[in-house]
Length: 141
Image (cartoon, rainbow, N blue to C red; front, side, top):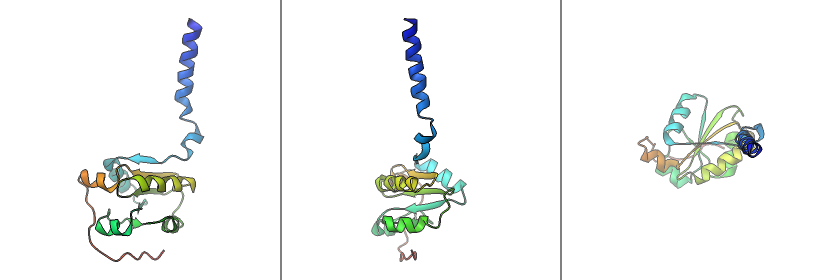
């Protein structure tokens, strides 16, 4: 009986530590609540904010100072100018496209990638401001 308890104990310890191996953390992005996203994004003055919404969604409303990457070509154009150590904050309307973009960024080797959980809808619901000015979107990428 003692052997059985010891084996179970060691199994759970091994299971717990398996999540801390370097390989399992290698391609993970942070899924942040609107509050966490806001705090971390504005705390890091060197961070990059990327909106992976459609042009129409971006023109309707977006987080101020965000760069629009409505497709992977635009996303890769933006990240070509970013250092691999820079924090990248990504969002979209509901959080689905941004989580896919975060996976792409991790696969490209970026270490600090953060997704806005729930997207712009959760951001607005939490009371954070957006930029709703209609303007021409020509970023030159």
